[in-house]
Image (tube, rainbow, N blue to C red; front, side, top):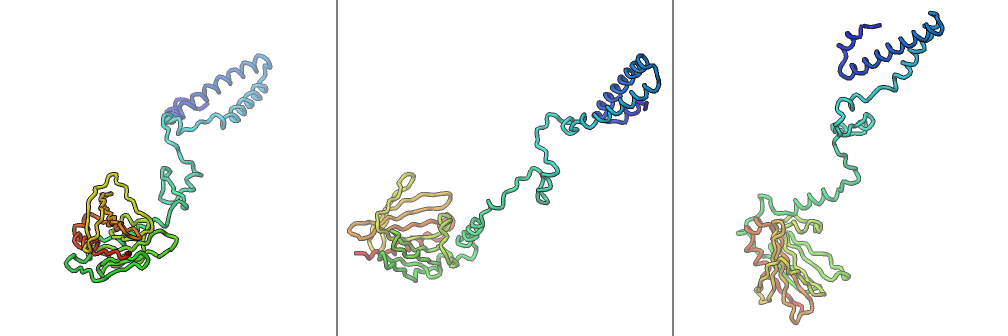
Length: 278
């Protein structure tokens, strides 16, 4: 029989436990077999047969007596372990703790909207200064009969006139001359002025709003509603609807820093509004 002490010194803590049990079981069973063979059979031949049978039984049961060594080393560790099969399905450069986002959940429109928002906003260093700006163009809306002046160097886009819609807007992009389409998805984050006429009355929720008054150069009165929403200054101008066929509103949505630069120009644009529906 191999030197048990030598084997125990070479083994780790897990192997020590297993080898000790193995030798104890083998030694005990050997003694039992020897007693049985000597007492009952009295022959060396039968002792060999029983010894072979004992070894066969031990070897056949060995694969089923093993334990998960990793689990034995740290039974309190509840961290889930990734199997080899699971790791084979992970992309290169990711570990078992990385959350894989399904490809179908990535919205390409979000990327395009972000790019469009960046393009539409007016935070670039090449923005034209207020001193160089003149209200040298006039927009007139045929359907709702209103007009507004604006700088020719700023982009302006008219909303498509759809008779099924109750209103129509025109968007003036503050300090930006490179806008070619209306990004409705991110419009509340883009510096702009929009003026529109409507077939029905327009109501603005007053909760949280600072309310004031405004008068255009043409003497038209308007009620103003102001609120700062996440750093974007939002002001609504609801024009007096007395004796008018349509209803009119102007909205200014602008970043605080941009407002500091263009405040006077924006005020002049709103003052230039004329309503010609009478």
